[in-house]
Length: 566
Image (tube, rainbow, N blue to C red):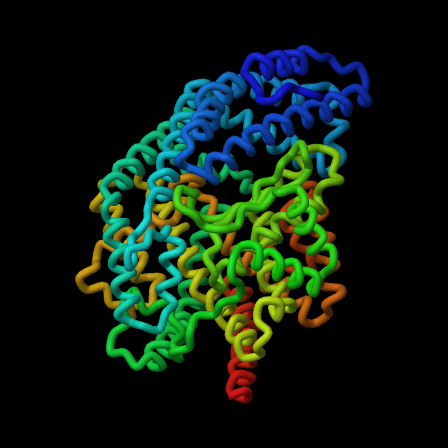
């Protein structure tokens, strides 16, 4: 299906109406019709993708912003009722039941029925308003910068100073960054108040008691419940937080500090200079190709194709939106990687993470329908977080020095121990927010601090900077832009540890199982996709305990090797 670009509401309405009017007379007709619907979805998805990509690459460009906002404010609202009509016609077709004998189609139609259940015409303008508010959040964050020694740095670039061994410098930079963030605290608090109320109204309109329940349906969470999430929170608190406290205490002793301050969290505890895995975006890409080639040749070929097609924007710069993402281009069948590299190890982790998403896109490319490639986040993040770990085999591409290589791997594994409690904290926070939509800003602040005490180490001294802790969630874009999309990182991290463990035991078999799972897209249930990867979709206390016993043993082995080198 060829539609002139840029897409207009009028052209799209014409195509939707033609597909709605079609009457299938055979199962072959029905299959061809589904493919036409898929092609239209791909075209719409890619048009929106490019509008979003251009806007986030330069948040100061008003034309790019206007193009994106035109889509979410004008085009999407026009299409929503037509999409609902088309969804209903698909699932009500006399040929639907026979088609659903194929498990992939059954999963696809289950998603359509979920969308039908959620659809309310009165929610269309609210959804457009929420996307506009999310763009406002992105612009606020993208405009943040600090001046250090007469030079302007983005927040991502400035964070590199927090790796430096000069403690006075770290304190000055952290303080400047905190002061800059505090300038927008009231604005972000007010923005979020508006978001919460609009989201709650959407849930009520759709017949749900809470936005949390609404989003579980919207995100297609058919394989676990809200109560399962809370059990995950408890398991992280019991089995991971103690490990984090142990590591933090060790770092505090190595730093020889009476009190850890927020500017002491990123520096090397032994006083070594920050790791410098690359010099600029070009160097990062070159080394990443080498790294992935050593892991699996196919992985490198994927990234090389993206390089040739100019589908990478890697370096941080002023006016660029924060964060990183991999955006699948549904019509072209290729992905785009966006990130804010500034020269540290975290950037390596980000590129191989987004590279995992990209590899996933390449492996799913042969799937027949676009819907089969719309994987749930629990599967999408399994692809990316597994890549962070299995790519460590090739990290000598960034670190030729053996000691630095082992240090980098140690930081990566300790980072997992630090990240999972944060994931649990953010998810628990979102559950509370939407279970209590009428809360005040002070109640929200108190709840965040309570959760920080539950999932934190209790060793960080925020005396004089209490608001930095109280509003630290403002930095988590998911809470503002993609609510409830975060616990998936935790579930996928557990899966990734399992994939890595399998690869350590049998690299060939582990990698093959990983790739076979990703090829499935969303043609199987989440537990079945995990089983294909040779792992469990399990977040029970016992499973988490076993995985982190393995992780701790790997850390111990690296530590022993470092002592030997010294």
